Length: 324
Image 1 (cartoon, helix red, strand yellow):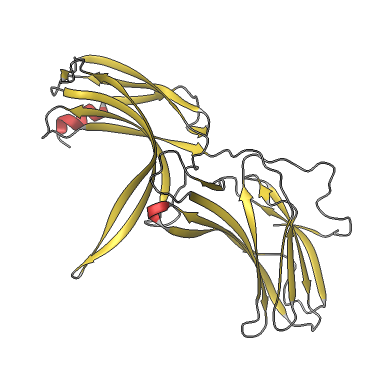
Image 2 (tube, rainbow, N blue to C red; image 1 turned 180 degrees about the vertical axis):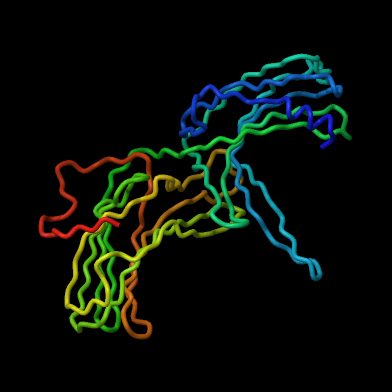
């Protein structure tokens, strides 16, 4: 971009009506105004001025040419709202006058949009939302001028009733692992009750019990991916050799975690839905080759859930509580 165009870009500012935060929930309206101070350093002969709100998946691919490996960046839009802030009445071009120009904007975030998704590693896929203004040049050889302001979107699903979820497995040494989630829907920042029972009739040594929260992504052309949101060893198991062990943990879900999502945005060209889902993985590490016992529990992250009334998480006999 030339020096004059760069100067013009620097003279563009965004002001949003929502105060003190750039976080928007699905179903809300994103509104504000764009201000441009035309200092006249360059003549702006334009076809139109357009403002848009776009949701985009950004992903990377690698290719090899000879001995050289290069990385390409791809941007796949799945949502777009736009309006023309100004155009020539006769469909030709106009010259933007000197001085200050203000253009309001207002966009509606539809309900079935995924949350903003940050990448957790180099060249990882991510989801972003951006408000952009475009100064579309009338002369083909001149590069259009644009400026962007990013917002954060949170998907708010319809309220759902949480249910109990149970998984169990046993190895060839008769070590049996059972895990129960009292509620399979959890809010960001909430503590999730998890009951774990180990039956070990042969008194085999169980060195530790580990837990992982895994996020699975399916983002169209970006393909499938998975990220470990959190992992740790749970308290209470250290070279355990008794016949039975049972405890309840309160798993702390991170505050900044993206909501589960499985839907097809209205302007998504792919037939496959965009998916963000979670599983809780538990593994009893048992002494001996190929002896570990592994279970997985599906977990839904949501900003809204219905609670069961007058129900204790577990019967009173579960009297040992560990906060992890």
